[in-house]
Image (cartoon, rainbow, N blue to C red; front, side, top):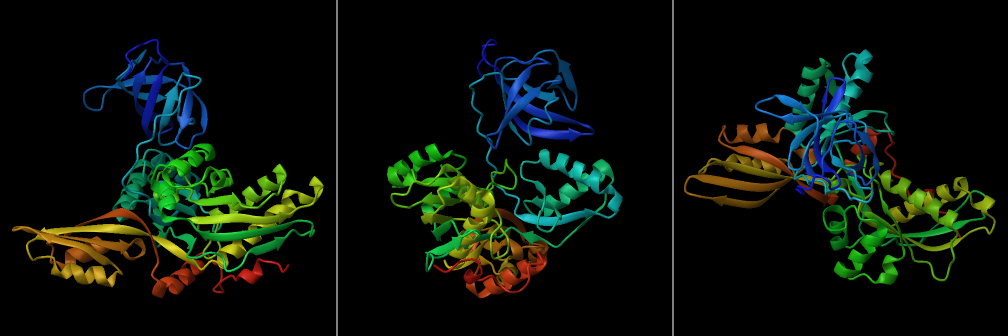
Length: 467
């Protein structure tokens, strides 16, 4: 901490807790000093900012006691009131006009288990929404949002126990009883090959033509975008990293137009929710108007947020604009003409690139006494799991396995039962993996059925036009 009291104030907020009608933000003062009434820049984890006015400052004492103070100094752990609307979950407060946000803490778990949630008493819907938002704001690994496709409210957590804790906290805080759906798995749509042909789509007025090709991103770049040194960078900084660390040419990085889709939760740090698709302009010698470019970028965000197979976000796909024909007059290339055409071209290119799904995986760690875990192997096999390591000592054994999240419901109880109470297991989120080809068809149909999309899979010919 900078002990210079006259330095710009910098406070990192690590947790927000809703208590009744007010929100208390817990954090640490890193420099400067802060008083009630101060107006500070609030830098959110999604790089946006607002203004926060501090209403009250508390210092934690012994036990649960919080002492109100008139000023806070560097190094102190404080509780602030009045900034509930300025930040969500975490962020940085500063009096500096040019100061940057402190990097948000990375979590080892991610909200991979989703349930739709509704109150047993429909009259409590609005109250449930408010209470769950307060709960989620105080939990760095929880997520609550409305699915615009199904109009359901979705609660997501790191596992079954996490969901149970959130529901129990809701009941204790507000007395609201809720009903949960079966688990909803957060699939991601991706491709395995380059589009078999360039997808062409014409605008409705026939004055504009867009040619798109889709292909899988390099695995190293995908890892950088989801959990590496490319996370959260603007296009300029990302370009520098791609040149220095990923062997891209500066000419190619200058062609990147956008990265998408935007996370459902702007502050999410889950690798499954990071923008991991790129849109590039690979046309040659073509001067594209700014409005035409913006419309194509808008279509890219829409398509990558809501995919084609099961309306899930896309992951690890490179979309290239390989050619375009556009009308010279701006009124003939308005958004209502260009955006739908660009969307159809991208969806068509996706379907011609061997599309498939990626699913979240758990690493299941099982421990128990010597030669007491034999029954766990059958449980892992029944749940499409794969044992990756098995070790033992003179007194204990340990099994490490990878199990799809879709197959992991109740796995802790099953392992305990199969090992006659000797096996203790924990499930830890371990990234995304392509679904097995033998199970892909059933998984896609089940996901489409839940979202009421119909059994018939879309075909490229439904989106592309003939030359």
